[in-house]
Length: 357
Image (cartoon, rainbow, N blue to C red):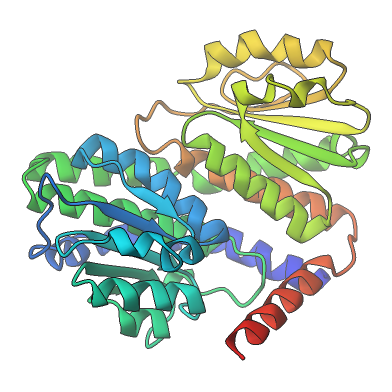
């Protein structure tokens, strides 16, 4: 496990540089999308599993805002076993797979092309099956990671997704060239805070590790696109620590889950400027139920992890992701949780081989 944590730490430390590298390629990416029309009848399908699926769902918020299209975000299996029947020739299918080897993602692209849909792939691996199957493959070697727990690749491919959506919006006259550049520069400005935010999160965990130590279960809450960021926190907690973790929308937590036995449960609130006032009303309610509560982000109380999260309509996750990954890595570094992550991924690969046979 120590080797995996060292690798994750290295990827965390290089992520800001890698993200800036991806942003530097935005002209190249956008130029390749010139022949992809988005009509009023065009439907978008965003396909991915695990952390890749989270990135797709986060990107869907930008799609609605700049393209005016609400994408259907689905798992590859759901797409290949039913939803593909609804695909039409002017639809666009965007598949995301960091390794580029996911069997169901490859099959999703193959079936979509069989329906004459336009297909885009976002992956870290050149020459991978996913890259070969898509009409428009975009490869980001900056996202390659040789460890089961993904750090750089998760947010790197999200950045790629954002650029693709902005490119489609630009070529389909939904945003101007100036607006395209303004969006890229906003993402760049937020990215330049990555190392700072990750360092603050790491230092806080090292000083307050007891907050995490006594938790046997974790509930991570967020609003809007931070729900998917909460999911990333929960997944990484399970992968790295083998500790049961749940991600849910903040208000939804109050509808039943909050009433469960609070013993040994840590509730983590991910908060940005848009959700701060709402969370301030929810925070005492959760505390009154007896849950330990950790507020991470904008406006945190003294006992929380207070971070200044810059206002951003679409790209708040660029500031929260480094905090999520830094917290998990710092937490794991302070305590040896065994090799649960290796077991999880070994079992998953075994299941894939069984299905392919």
